[in-house]
Length: 467
Ligand SMILES: Cc1cc2nc3c(=O)[nH]c(=O)nc-3n(C[C@H](O)[C@H](O)[C@H](O)COP(=O)(O)OP(=O)(O)OC[C@H]3O[C@@H](n4cnc5c(N)ncnc54)[C@H](O)[C@@H]3O)c2cc1C
Ligand SMILES: NC(=O)c1ccc[n+]([C@@H]2O[C@H](COP(=O)([O-])OP(=O)(O)OC[C@H]3O[C@@H](n4cnc5c(N)ncnc54)[C@H](O)[C@@H]3O)[C@@H](O)[C@H]2O)c1
Image 1 (tube, protein in one colour):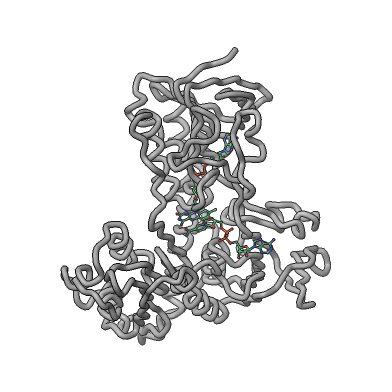
Image 2: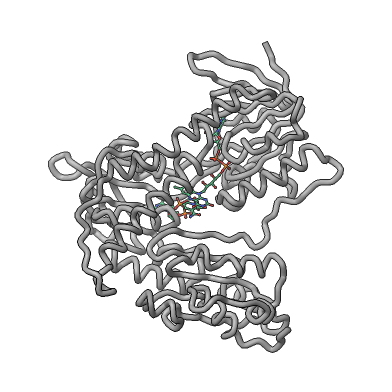
């Protein structure tokens, strides 16, 4: 029997937030084929940052001697760290699922959905049952999954055993002695920090010449240099083959430099691909772009009338704050067809919770050069501020890019302690168009807080126009 709904949502990550009061008294289907709550809650932002915090604590103890405080890290109780994280998260996922199962106007379908036609879905439920659903409107919020390079797939090593992705590595039973990571992006940078801080020997194998290649080149270079001091970093290197280690234990990577890397576990962090290959996109009339994303217009409309998409499955940004912001726009658009809101894609910031932290928003210096755009930059060292002295900081920076003629900020790129929080006034200035001079001088900056690095960076920009 076919069930008809006012709204059907595929994916319970940011999609779950679409059940707004506008749908009170209407029928909403929430379809989830994996763990309720999606990536951020279960295997993404939230658990990783809870592990990162524990890693920060371990690092603080290790580095305490620099400040004249003698401390020894006695050990890391991995199982306790892990259980604290998932002891907090798993009940939230369970509660969210129950809330949709028992909700007054929601029906939760716990299975994989495939389009079979125009706003028509087939859901594979546990036990082999199938349910057919139609809806006036459908939102695809199906997220993305880790890409596994061929060289790993061809190794024959099973995922979740010796080979992990971020989906599984946080739940392992015990810390490995040696961890190899393929990839030099966000996940590699964060997880290398976590495991190295916990005493694991980490080897990062990256294709590019620098880690975090997509960010400002200067920051990426500085980050890579600091990473080399903490982890065994092999840049400009491809993995030619993956197999079992000598004696059958662990894994061995054969690199194109002729070197081999032996490790107890391998983590693959080579990007995430939108979940569109098993969605029946063709049957639903949804166009898929070359990179696997669903095609959407500026308002989140797919190529199929009445079908919307948001988040990792369609967005150019695989970030939770973007998925949430897109969900807010789509939630509005579902009920205001004559007053559509655009997906907010201006000045999208990102933060990388590694050691050091990195935070970035807006144009980089290279962007300005490539666009032949007038610009000035200023790099302010944390170490030149009072709180930087307290931190004994010698490597952290706040780099700003501004337009000298308009006096407006173009971009901000920070690397160092609390970079992901320090960047917020700069994100705000970009979003609200606050002139640099007004931002620097039009308010108090608490002395001697770390935020003075941002104040000094703003004051250091050589602008032709001031407010
Ligand atoms: C390790 C890691 C750390 C991260 N850290 C951060 C961070 O610090 N900050 C940040 O901004 N972003 C971070 N991200 C990215 C962030 O998690 C994602 O951008 C965000 O969660 C995407 O939300 P979404 O709603 O689009 O998709 P998801 O949350 O992935 O939800 C999609 C859901 O749809 C389900 N689904 C898929 N296909 C179907 C189908 N056909 N039928 C039924 N259900 C289906 C999936 O099971 C999934 O639960 C991180 C990602 C990872 C992997
Ligand atoms: N703090 C955060 O906001 C945060 C944290 C983690 C993940 N994320 C999101 O999740 C996404 C996925 O993270 P990620 O680290 O997997 O992707 P990424 O795009 O950040 O990095 C992928 C890395 O893998 C490399 N690579 C790609 N294919 C390869 C191959 N075949 N062999 C070897 N190397 C290969 C790339 O050169 C790059 O270094 C990120 O882009 C980000 O949007 C965000």
